[in-house]
Amino acid sequence: MDQELSALENKVEALVAQLETLRAENHRLRERVNVLEVDNRKLSSKIDAATARIESALAMIPEGVEL
Image 1 (cartoon, one colour):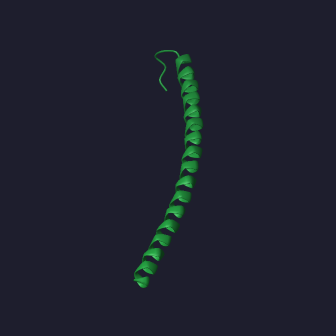
Image 2 (image 1 turned 90 degrees about the horizontal axis):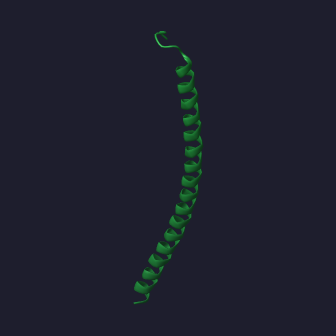
Image 3 (image 1 turned 90 degrees about the vertical axis):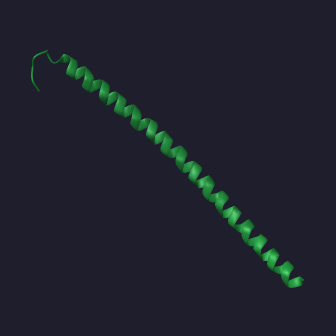
């Protein structure tokens, strides 16, 4: 009986350790996602600005002129 309880205790301790590891990893991943989302918004804004500049430049080209 003592061996069974000891084995169960070891398994529970291992499970708790794994849970703590996974929680820490989850926290790191959530932080990384937040950083990447901010970067994504910045890059999207830059793309929108570049698109607007290109469209503005194209609008200045007279009709009938081939590029």
